[in-house]
Amino acid sequence: MIRISKLVVLLVALVVFGGICRAAETTIKEFKAEIGELKKTSGEMPWLLETKKGSTSALGKLDKPVTGKATFKLKVQTAQKSRIRNGALLLKSSNKRTVNAGIQIGSKQYSVSGEVVKEIRKSDAKMNQSQVFDLTVTVNIPAKTLTMTVNGQEIGKTKLKNSFKDIAEAGFYVYRTATKFSDISIDNE
Image (cartoon, rainbow, N blue to C red; front, side):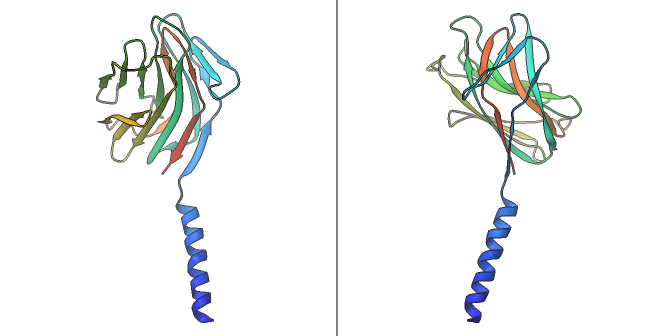
């Protein structure tokens, strides 16, 4: 009888502790565009961000800034048949530093760029330009690293500068194009 009760207590402790230690997942579902036009529709990719001149972004505030490790997941698809086509995840710190990780669809490249990161550029001649891209970006603030994955393939890992202290906002970035995006899912570890 005593052995069974110890086993039950151990199992309950594991379930409770496991639940506490699990990653917290949130989703950003509201964004505000800086310049250009952000339209909300319905479906799996409800956001259309468009600008004809220059670049624009649409950001959503996180409930609490990320200061540890977090994984951001979203879908990206061009809304244009030709010309300039691109779309990226934009991350902004509380001290206004930015980094973006995304796809330059027209030139068949993946890239990570910004003032606080060592740039990554990788070409993909076989890229299907009309496909939906599953974009995953994992940022580890204490380790100062950013890893970008597209459609399950790791594109690259780079170092963040010390001035990128947290992630306070996340959203979308485009340059002279129209691109569809899903909501952004965030797993805090």
